[in-house]
Image 1 (cartoon, rainbow, N blue to C red):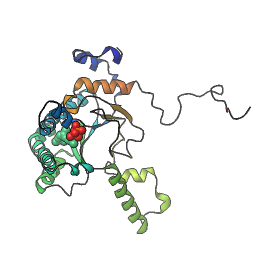
Image 2 (cartoon, rainbow, N blue to C red):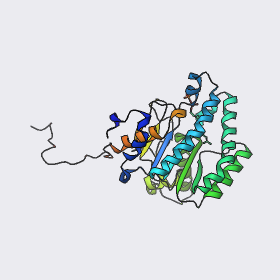
Image 3 (cartoon, rainbow, N blue to C red):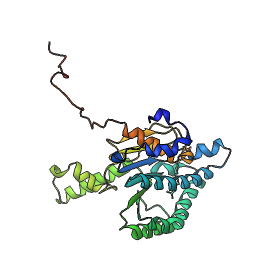
Image 4 (cartoon, helix red, strand yellow):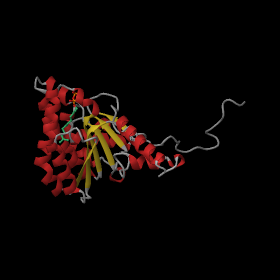
Length: 267
Ligand code: FPP
């Protein structure tokens, strides 16, 4: 079945059958956007959109596990989100704490490893404490990894790596000629994680917004017009099927014969 034929939610049972189980992206990253617009459109406070966003995240974790993804990395709070009205910032930080306290036992039961990625120092003691507890509790779980990016910014991450590497060079631990992609990877906050094969952005905006700038270099990008609170199994499977139709060349070309390349500048 082609994506064009799968247009209604009624097809969502069928849609998961359409996924090629041999080509599941191991790591999917998601920019969960559109909570505020979803709520405003319904005449509701933005906080309702964020609340609904939590239940959508739970559903997408379940579906990801079901189809065989191994890692999900979600953008929950960017370094730029601090510029929002203080009330919304406080609400989001409280929400992270409350949700984590409520869900951590289930997350552990499901054998999910949870990791927080970002500069955590500005957060409250209470949030940092439940983050530490959750990461420690789930660190040996190997079924599935959920990375939650909070106070995360791709540029800030790269600056941090540059500082770490400069320090190591200055102290003589490494030489400038030792700096390569592998070393940078090992200094990133995502160290040890495979780069995402697919990044999904909901809410229709067509930008990366400072998310995983280094790691997304060759990721396939899928933009969903659907606001995050309306995103669901059907929409997620659509993204996966679309990803599976892509021809990933990583800057190369599929096959080149002597015939198919002619230098047009020489005659
Ligand atoms: C973007 O929508 C969403 C956020 C800034 C918050 C995302 C948080 C959640 C979905 C809750 C996740 C909970 C946990 C525990 C990780 P927006 O507010 O920018 O929407 P808009 O673009 O329509 O204004």
